Image (cartoon, rainbow, N blue to C red; front, side):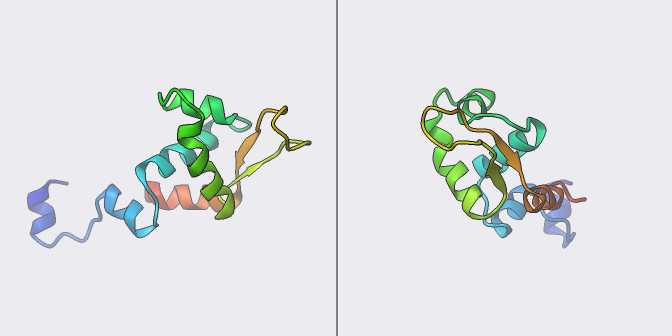
Length: 102
């Protein structure tokens, strides 16, 4: 879709507008995508997958998505000594389907 088609009243929503409507940032969407595609991934691996270099750059996103029920940490023991094991929840997968327009 071109900007001209959009300006002429086409009701298709641009992907970034859809993220805004879902109260998500681009980084939120990217983290959710990576967790869906690589179940069991660690925070450090999410950062590396996105080319961010540091786990701390995605920690806030992970914390927010866990609070929203989009991802879960399936570690048996949650402590600093055990790597995270992130997986998307059903709610997270359904939200991703909305983003993709399914």
